[in-house]
Length: 230
Ligand code: ATP
Ligand code: MG
Image 1 (tube, protein in one colour):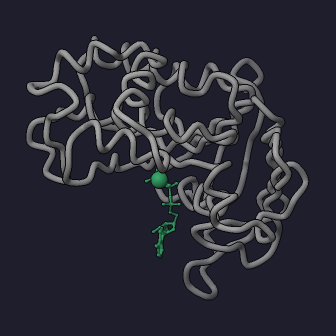
Image 2 (cartoon, helix red, strand yellow; image 1 turned 90 degrees about the vertical axis):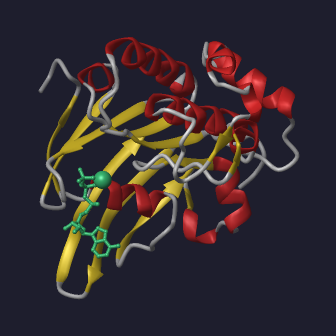
């Protein structure tokens, strides 16, 4: 990709099966102009996460094309694709290490200052004071000292450090208290600002703020439109 990626995304007639003969995505097409937000909704198993796998190129479509700024993503190097597209997965993933290390993992060469700046840009600097040892608090797969809501915010901060033009977010469904919910929602809005985003949405507030909602059913888009249209 040339420098100055706009972040126009288009998915054209994408079909995909993990196992031959059992298609999980069937002829999926849509476009997300630079800076827009697309919400994916639909019942469990309908193919939402699988579609995000296509855009991040974790799997290649059996047929159809994913394009960024008009370029077929198969032509990009993994490195340039990783610069443009970041994924916040459904299962918030923290590795063993400190919270700060988990945040700066978003980009090679990032520093503790970048971690703080990322939290600030999400209006989440308070998180540092809430954690027992601030950015030095140990996190990890068992995540003993980090709550579920905090884990989500740490993953958002990692994505800010990566600063992708296109962000894919598979919204977590974990139950958090109302106060945390409000803070996560606010941080999410900050995170998505001025990027193209594809969000597997569970919260009504997320769905409402989408430019376009795609309703999935058994691997197909059965409805599309804004919240007011649907
Ligand atoms: P949820 O809302 O529960 O996250 P989803 O819409 O994201 O569901 P997907 O994870 O895309 O659904 O799954 C779509 C279908 O593909 C399901 O039938 C699922 O069992 C199957 N599937 C998902 N991942 C794999 C995999 N790695 N290998 C084989 N089948 C898979
Ligand atoms: Mg999913």
